Length: 124
View (cartoon, rainbow, N blue to C red):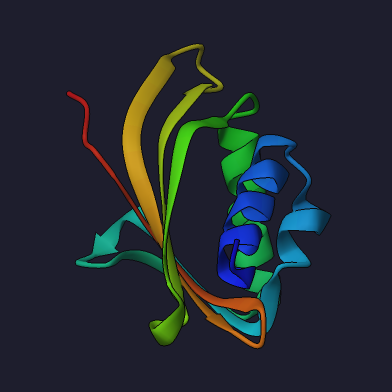
């Protein structure tokens, strides 16, 4: 398996372990995170290691039992990119259970994530 493929598996494992230190060890200092929700067409954007860490900590706080299952990983080594497709399940703080399909588009440089762009289905 390629380095990107291994990184995608490590990322998924770290997210499912809710291990923010391990997640962040896979991100570059100048990383960018784009989350699905926000007031802009791209959702919300967080730049830099500290801001990305805070945003991801918010994910774990808002969905304390969040889990990314049924994951599939797709790799383009020539473009230093990978996609992880998953089913997110979890329980919100208000007790509402959610299950959505989604994916993350990752860009890598020197073995570290420089960009994570997340998408998920809107369940009404």
